[in-house]
Every structure is written in structure tokens, then in C-alpha cells.
Image 1 (cartoon, rainbow, N blue to C red):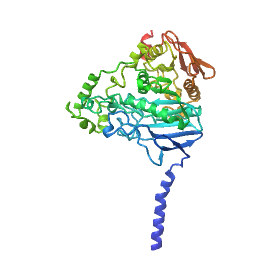
Image 2: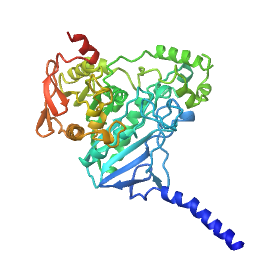
Image 3: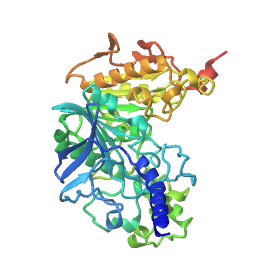
Image 4: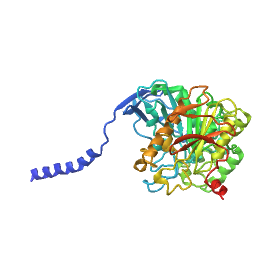
Length: 471
């Protein structure tokens, strides 16, 4: 009997243990890098190094909520950087398998100021692309598959993809916070995070093979809005030398501070927080509560601050006082925004550094039944990153034409990142020469067969305008 029991126990243990063994991931091929805060352990695969969940600032929680990003606390030993940390707090579907409109599902956290770094193995002095994700300023994450930096790395570029604070935890001003830390800038915490990222890149990216003197900032939608605003923030000057804005020009004036405070007070009343709330009261509200509240979740936009954000980028452009670097800007055929992109290119390229204008016109064959008016918002991402197989938009449904164009477009984006200082044009895509835009000039049309220059004037702002112009 004892032998039978032992046999059954052994069999049961085998049944339990075997599935666990089968589900274990393969061991990583680890690689260590020394940063100012400590040693990181990343992974190596096919000549590409990836470091996930890299902290660039202290967690913005507790007393650090609604304060400028604080320095990372140095750690002892080797810190694993082989898995992504949770995205910033945002509204998600109760079904954890369903992504929100920013591409995020599952757990999130207010402790979210982390980077993903993808670099060529053995790189030295490689140009750097710092990527700010989209998501209407209250959704999204830098770790999504569409932003995979592998193709960039294989072309010799280090990619740094960023999480920045979202919603009311990012864009929020309130009278109760004014008296605390009076020497610190108030509001615009996502932008303050963005400057902190660029400072981190300046101080650490050489350890990953990157050149801190060759940094391009780039973003799409809300991330493009981050880039747009960085062009007029004094503390960002000298931290980057080129800029890419995809479907997110957002050349808007800042929201007056008093108006933003009033909007915050009114929104807080919907969750039972009165106008007399103290700073401790506000910091006692859970991050999830902000994300769940429709009046609060999106935040209250960018606000003026004399010490950090003394002007808007549209005002700086009109005065000729923006941070003058080469700019690549455009939009997709099936969305609005081309007129804004053209205005941006005209203002940025009127003197000094050149501006390059594009419109993305390729609709994948598997999307033709849905995108009847052309490629929609975000459609260009898996092409600019050449990330079809990592993106939820592509994968097996993509055909040879999609893959060929993705390779070409990624080559052109990388060519801009690598463009020599002082250059007025650059080549990519089997001999295509991308010329800068001046008012009344040409745009680069990105079509199924590749890129071509064409007159920009007369192109509609988006599909609605195109329909209105039709007979």
C-alpha cells in the first residue's frame, strides 16, 4: 500500500510539474550596461540589445505626485531590465484581453516613468531616436509592439521609447498645490517628464552605444504634441538636434492657468471633492479614480509657467524664436491634419533649419474594405518603424507590398535621423531625394510604390474636405 501511495504521489507530481516546465520562457542571453544609477541586465537577440523597464525618474507617487520628475534612487547589484513595467494609469476595458484605444490592456500603475531601449550590439556613437507614444495624452504606452525599435537598430539607430505621465496626473493645476514647493514649476508634468528623459539620454545613452549629440525627438498624435511643445521649452534646448511629428502638430495656444484650475475644481466636484480640498486631499485620491472619472481622466492640457513653459510653440514659431532644428512632419490621407502639418512645415522651414513634409497614402490590401477614404490615424506607425510583425495592425495579414513599403519608409525615417548637420535634403528609398518644404512647395507622398515629391497646395486637409470638393 505504501508503495502504491508513493507511486500515485510521484505520478501526481509529474502531472503538476510538467505543464509548469513547458510554460517556462527560454533563458535570456543577458547583457549588462552600467548607468549612472546602477547596472542593468538586458537581453540580446540577433545582434540587437533590448532593455525594458529602465527607470529615468523616481516613481511620481505620494509626495512626488504633481511635482517635477525626481532623480532615480541608485540601486545596488544588478537590476533586471528584461520585462516591461506597467503602463501609466489610464482607463482600460474590464476584459483584460481587450485593448483600449491607446493599445493598452491589463494592469497599469502610477509608478510608470520607464523607458524601453533598443540598440545595435557593439554600437559606438550611434544616432538616437527618442519616441513619445500617442494616445490623446491619457492613453497609451511606449512599450507597444508598433514602436518596436528592432528595425531601427538593424539600421544603426538606438531607439528610446518613453512612458510619460498621463491624464490628470500629467496636466493638472490646482490652487491647493501652488503653495507647496513654490520654487518648482507647476503643471505640464508630461512635458517635464519629457525633458527629464532627454537629460537621462544625455547622461546615459553612451553606455548603450548612442551619441548624446545626435538625438532626434519623435512622436505620433499626442506624442507629436509632446515633440511640438518641446520645440519651445527653454530647458530642452541643446538636448536634441532633430524632430519628427507624425499626425500631431497641435499648434495651439496654451490653456490659461486660471481656466485650467477652474476646470479641475469643477471636475473634482463630480467625485465629491470640494473646492476647499487640500494638497493632501488631492494626493489621497487614487490614481485609478482619476482614470475612471470621465471629467478628470484626460487632464486639462498645457498651461503657461514662467519658469518652465513661458510660451507656446505656435507663438514661438510666429516670432521666429523656436528651437531651430530640422523637422519632419506630416499626416495620413484618411485623417484630418494635413493643413496643420503644412502650416507647421512652412513656419518651421521659413528660415534656418529645413522642414520636410509628408503625406502617407498607402492603404494595405487587407484594410481596403475598412479604410475606404485612405489610411487612418496611426496607420503609418508599422511602416515608419517597419514593425509589421510586432504591431497588432499587421502580422500575417500584410502582403509583400506592405513589407516592401515598410522597409522603404523606415529607411527614410532613419536617413532623416542620420542626416548630416547643415544638410538641406537627404536620400533614401532607392534614390529618392527628399527636398525641404517651403510655402507653396512640394510634399513627399508615400504611396504603395514608394515615395515621390508632388505639389502640396491643393491637397485636402482630410477625407471630409476631399468629399466636399468632389462634384
